[in-house]
Length: 304
Length: 252
Image (cartoon, rainbow over all chains, first blue to last red; front, top):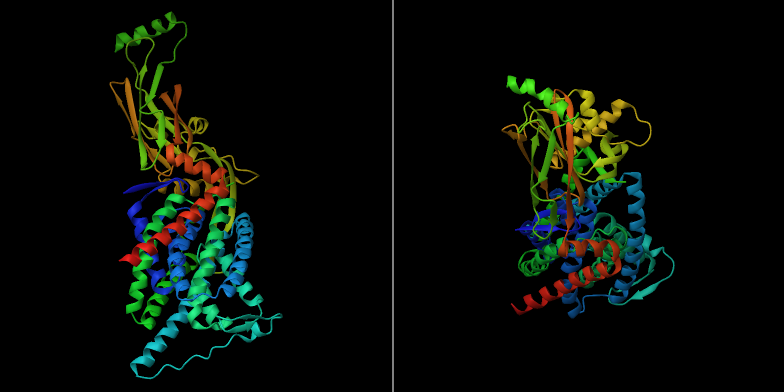
């Protein structure tokens, strides 16, 4: 099924794109991450121009996180107070990201920076997740109870001025901490075309120390609004949102997300986390090869 | 043959120096419409070449057809390994890089014309006039031009075929050039050259208009000129689809 993408200026096989959307949707349903970290590189690999890939992947992540966010909202799994601060930071972040994007583009180093960010972030977080899930699985095999992690926020967070109460998260911390965190994910969303869920969730758990039952819901809530802001930002600045590409990805990902969510209820969380860690590490490795061993192309063309 | 050879100068005299043969080029389609489902187009460039003296061309001509897409200003960047990682280390700004370029000929170009003629008429991928900005030494310029040609060739946007033109009966010629789906829109020029003994005898130009039509045109125009509404629509679609999927699967 050949589909012409009017903004990417390219004919693609529509079924491949829908399949790609379904794959990332499956991930998002299973793990509560957006899946943008997989969509954007795969689209670029398929021949879609990088900016169009990042811009259109953002709207796919919006679609995939909507139903998840609704589901969490229904059972009170969202701290709206915390979410609002994160979203405010995220929207600021997309603005900063757009400026950075333009600056790096002018310097000619945008693709190198994006690749380095992918390798560092995905490699680091993938490694941590893999380590954690392997120790957990080993402990289970030996029949040991897993030591409960003490929930506490990072000492740096405690040193920030001004304190607010976030009731559902069970926190009394400075709003600057979630604001900065939201900002960081906003910048990454704009630059890398990712939702930032796989950074946000661990950061909420281990840096902010939020209570576990609102972490995934609040993260989805933040991703939902920040990717919406990213889509708008791209539509206004880079004009690179391809509605046909986004539509195809959405068809796949929204259904994939639903199937993934049902899957997740049956599987063991440690195993799920190990699989996600391996996928994340795989993408990081692919990017690292391009940086250190051999890039896909020596020459690249950019319109003046 | 010999009789014609004798008659030809006479005929030329009679025609008052109208020595150039007549070249009548034609293209299978003058409009390429980029619509939904567009996967590229196959252009047939054909025509006839007639000697004004007689009813058919007496001599062997070579035909070269050059199809050129709209030119664009680009930055060409080259990656080099710096401190263990590949980064964009060098660049060249080119003011007139064609977005599409195909040279097809009845024999390989270097067998038909000498270097100078090839350079004048831009016959061949190594003869592209890219107009680099700023002073740049010829060797580096060559290096960048080769890099661009290699990249574009692998994307199907640049092509050189030394046996792509067939001439039948020394009168009719035809060539096929495929446009891939990722061609840029704009006006394409197809220039046909008739060459004899290393000299361009005559040439003629035809145009092909490649443009987005219908839905594709509408989307491209909205994305470019109406960013706010377009963005809002994209957000609405993504939220709507996510919500509908959630509702549908809740029923299952």
